[in-house]
Amino acid sequence: MRTFTLATMLASGTSALTIPLLGSLTGFKDIPVLSLSQGGKAQCYSGLIAVPVTTTGNTQLNLNLPNNQSSVTDIFTQYLTSTSTLVQTLTGPDATVSGTFNIHAKLCFPLLSLPPLVTPPTVQFLIHGIGFDKGYWDFAPGYSQVDAAAAAGYATFTYDRLGVGLSDHPDAVQVVQSPLEVDIAHALIQMLRKGNLLGTKFGKVAIGGHSFGSIQSVGIASRYPDDVDAVMLTGFSLSSASFGLTFAAFNAALANKNQAARFGALSNGYLVTGSPQSNQMAFFRNPNYDANLFNADDNNKQTFTFGEFFTLGKVVAPATSFKGPVDVVNGQNDFIFCQGDCLNPSDQNAPVTGALFPAAGGKCSTFMLPGAGHALNLHYGASQMFAHMNNFLKSNGL
Ligand SMILES: *[C@@H]1O[C@H](CO)[C@@H](O)[C@H](O)[C@H]1NC(C)=O
Image 1 (cartoon, rainbow, N blue to C red):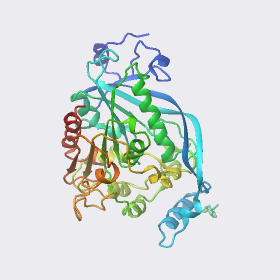
Image 2 (cartoon, rainbow, N blue to C red; image 1 turned 180 degrees about the vertical axis):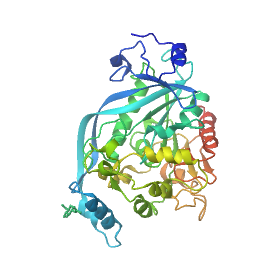
Image 3 (spheres, helix red, strand yellow; image 1 turned 45 degrees about the vertical axis):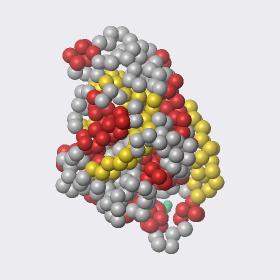
Image 4 (cartoon, rainbow, N blue to C red; image 1 turned 30 degrees about the horizontal axis):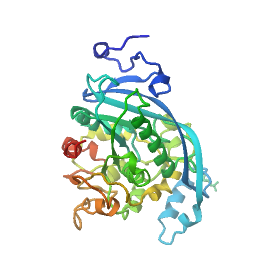
């Protein structure tokens, strides 16, 4: 076994050095892989974590897997039809789902802090949205909340949600649904709080979400308020009025056909956005992003499932028992949650905390990133937003 030192890691330039801890002792299934964040401000440990979980909140969906792309398109056409009864037809009773799911996660610490010897007091638990994986939070140098958080003294925990990236891809209709994903997040937060990962016990957990990850964050704070010390919602508002336009723009495609090389083994329940044009319309606002980042994102576009689509908002309920601070952040030109203008008819950040976190305390805040679209971490000015989020935590003593 190789001996881990930061010097050997930096000297070798490899991202796959072993550390002298057995995988089973770290909370990871195998010896975690060591790497640096995009901007080199954080040292990260990644691998699969086995998460035993039960949810009672899934929905039994009366939906057979579509046979082909034509049937996929037809489901969305039916959904968007003005007189549609599709959702009522498909929605069955609540369903219980149990299992142990492998979740691929990355736990990052400020450079030169050796866990568990030096433990930052707060971990940021960051949940990506639809179409992305955990790399959304550490996309490129200068476009990385993982770096910005580490530079500000925070640890970060990012993970591929169930059905995404390197995590398990179970039944895309009955299993990979929004409620089960909230319970998986809860289980992961409990591991961080109990010190089950790398022996590092975190006293404070700030959750941060993007888009569907923000929906998940509301669900976690609502159902498990004791999990959470602060909430940061990005790419999120109270309005779902543009979801129809969004899913029309997505032009959803079978992942196993559209991206056969990456997703050829997945069932017909796994979908991706149909084209680069879909990604531009839904996630990016011209000209306020670097075309190289757009292309990198499009080449790595990630899946979503029918199960998620039909249960997206099921977990959203006011977090009446959550008493911590809340931060709401949007790109000014977010298409999905603001139909392209988050200042119309007035600031869409403003009403979120009062409506969903009526008992919130501390110093709550909002931030609007000028000229950014929905995938705001990938737009110019992202670093201002990261600084705002870390300052929000600092101002609340986290
Ligand atoms: C797609 O599947 C449906 C349902 O099985 C079938 O009726 C239809 O003919 C298929 N369409 C194409 C283009 O293969």
